[in-house]
Length: 110
Image (cartoon, rainbow, N blue to C red; front, side):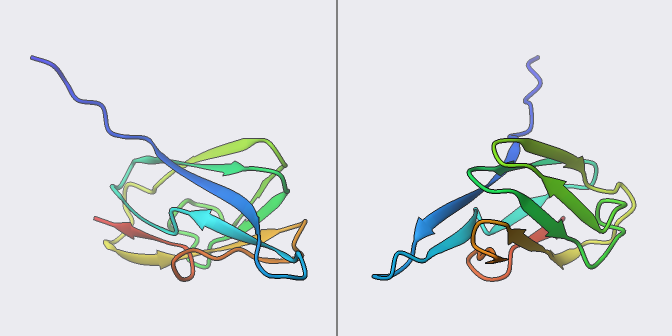
């Protein structure tokens, strides 16, 4: 019997020119994900350094992650976290601003 592997959760931070003045904005893609307790989540820092802030430290066991441009970072969701929606923020060095998702990036824990 084949065992199915869970699909990897990879969030990419991309920069896009947002308007006529060529101002770039950063976006988390996808902005919202649903994950299981104990599942790995990976962030890819495209062309800018990232600082990610997690208001609820129980989500990953830390409250801040730094990822250098072109690198990835994988963290595991806490096995004992309550189900719910957990917003977080991604600051990008190149834009000197916070990234956007569909809304504030967030993870839903099932």
